[in-house]
Image 1 (spheres, rainbow over the protein chains, first blue to last red):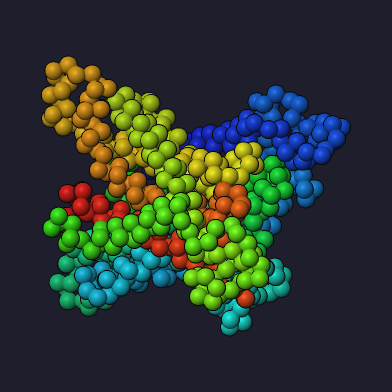
Image 2: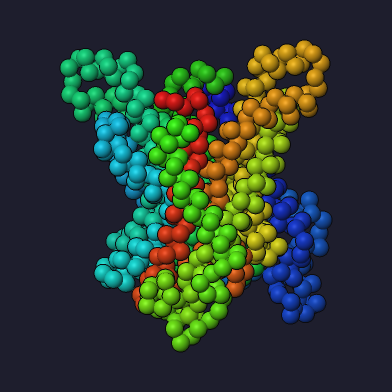
Amino acid sequence: MISILLRRIVSLVVTLLVVSVLIFFVMNLLPGDPAAIMLGTSASPDTLAALRAELGLDQPLPVRYLAWLTGVLHGDLGRSYTYGVPVAGLIADRLAVTIPLALIAVVISVAIAVPLGVQAARKHNGLFDVIAGFFSYISIALPAFWVGLLLIIVFSTMLGLMPAGGFPGWGEGFGEGLKALVMPAIALALPQAGVLTRVARAAVLEVMNEDFVRTARAKGISENTAIWRHAVPNALVPVVTMIGLQFTFLIAGAVLVENVFNLPGLGRLAYQALSQRDIVVMQDVVLFFSALVIVMNFIVDLVYLVIDPRLRAGAR
Amino acid sequence: MKKILRRPLFLTGLLITAVLVIVALVSLVWTPQPPTKMNILHKLQPPLAYGFLGTDQFGRDLASALMVGAWNSLSTSVLAVVLGASIGTAVGVIVAIYRGWFEIVVMRGCDIIFAVPPILSAMMLGAFLGSGRFTAIIAIAVFMVPVFARLTLSAALQIWTRDYVMAAIGIGRSKGTITLVHVLPNISNQIIVQVTIQLGLAILTEAGLSFLGLGMPPPAPTWGRMLADAQTFLGIAPWLAILPGLAIAFAVLGLNMLGDGLRDLLDPRDKS
């Protein structure tokens, strides 16, 4: 177990390093002078030179990469050009929105998908199964940001029940913050729920035919207990994996949904950095998001090892 | 033919996709109004009040814009997926020939590319290349490469263990010839199915990029930017936000159904 864990950690570190190299070199080797891009066409040569020196652009590329990496490892992500503050602080502030948003979205999608998938598997080929299949087809095809717009039309402009956007901050009270995140989270969760419903249904169907479920039934326990105590826990492995694999799409969705609802999250920060051509922030945010995806996959791998003992033996 | 008619999933998908393709192609030669023609006197008209689907904030005909949007969205997505699928498939079959450390490096590389969501890589590229169709195509294609590389590799490796490949090796055929004559034709069905499924994803991504202003620049109508523009008028002209989104969902739904239907039809293993 320890050796598997060590190997996974080494591979995690190598992947993270390669990603950092890739992002850095893409951002710095593409045509265009970052300083000129950040300042626009009207900048004077003096200002340009000053910014180039501040960004360290007068140094060779590998030196700049090492300086950036060392900074990142020490929690110093550089200074944002447009905000004039350290990027680390910016990201930390924005995480207070994006992390709860993503978590609520995952919870909602699981809360929809698992009961739906389980019920569809129980009524295999029945009416409910068809309806659940229809639901997942439709919801997978929905762009999350469009669902967001529809929710705003119905619940904000027509019914006036929910805020159409913006975030009051957690300082205004937990309830107010939560209220601002509910609709964005539903928008993010719906397409995910479609994918998860399919996975849950297929997994439960497979497990229901296993010997241990048959044995449980033969012992005379109720159908409900057989399903929820024996079949579902074993069917959760693929569901957890799918949540991990879908994480990239959750993040991509968050970038868009945060813009629809005007939420000051990480996705909105990335978008603002793009429109303000703040390359330092862009570089750090993309690295952060990518690292998040990689670490997420790593955690899914570990969860796998914990919940499925067979893999521990097989992973040598 | 009988086999096809018994597959409602495939037929529905085919029908939706056909409608989409026909609308996109028709838009090249005819639209009810020129899609960019402004008519400020008739701005923000609801569907059927002025024009079939109403007008936007400049009085432009929404139906015409949606039609041209279908072409813009579909052509960008097809180019991106074909580019990504070609590179990915080439990488996959070549890795299947050489394997060894080459396989480890390429597959790790795929993991790494997968870690950067296409929206973000488009933002990085957009900062330098400027926004536009080219940026969108490259960003989506980059994300498609690992999808097809993985699929092709695992499918090709299975073919390499078959008896007829052994026989081809036995009579001295080169690895390149075997790949072209035996491997590629035998995995083409799986690639076609995957192309269809990934097209749906590409349309979603393209819409997202256009929504953020990273797609084709105005005045070219794109579904994503129409949604972005509609945000200002949610209260007074909700149809501007509803119809382009319906178009996206319709297109993705059709392609996903077609892809799943094709898989049932072409992949004999999935006959459960």
